[in-house]
Amino acid sequence: MTSANPTPVADGSRPEDPPPDDDRSDAALLQAHVDGDPDAFGVLFGRHRDRLWAVALRTLGNPEDAADGLQDGLIAAFRRAGSFRGEAAVTTWLHRVVVNACLDRIRAAKVRSADPLPDDLDDHAARGALAVSPTAGDDPADLAVGDERRRLVLDALASLSPDQRAALVLVDMEGYPVSEVARMLDCAEGTIKSRCSRGRARLAVLLGVLAPDAAEGDRHHGNPHPAGGVPSTDEPRGPPAD
Image (cartoon, rainbow, N blue to C red):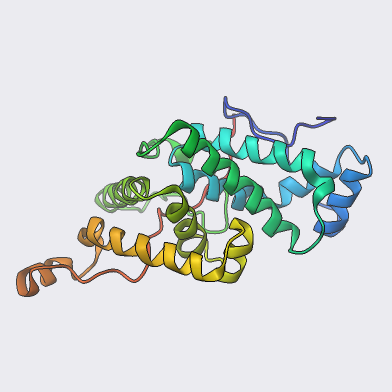
């Protein structure tokens, strides 16, 4: 790659933020990169880094693997930018490349479980659309419950097949429409719906303890009420900083 390296590396380092005053569209930046602009891809990546990182982290389950998966995806996007034909938004294309790179890592390593996020993840970065850092007034007991909830969700996600996990992360945790996720993963909308439905059914059993009325359901009906979607693992994070 040229000039600034636009991808985070395995040791957790990341490039400096790109200049904020570049008002070119995503498509224009990608084309500029294809045409030889040495800075365009770094600006494009900086614009979407937080969301791509959140998807990689939730798909792979821990920061080390997520950094590798995100780097694999962005290297692929860097090299294959000339193949982009504009059938979808540039962001959709970037997500597709990154998610597929993460899934390739899962399948190659036959990963069936993921480590919980480290306790010091908040020290690495406080980035992302939903990022909320603990404040002085936070109750330690509430924080402990949140950490346990996050661990349970990540462990449950790790038990799903890679395809189901990717669909649930993108639809339920990142909030993308089914139609857009279908384009990202290059499959039919019905396939995404089926993967989400089967994944939710499995998670409803594994995560029944997280439902607010789970205890009431256990007492009166023998089973907790199934949850409608996947609980978020709190906040999406930015790539770890030095």
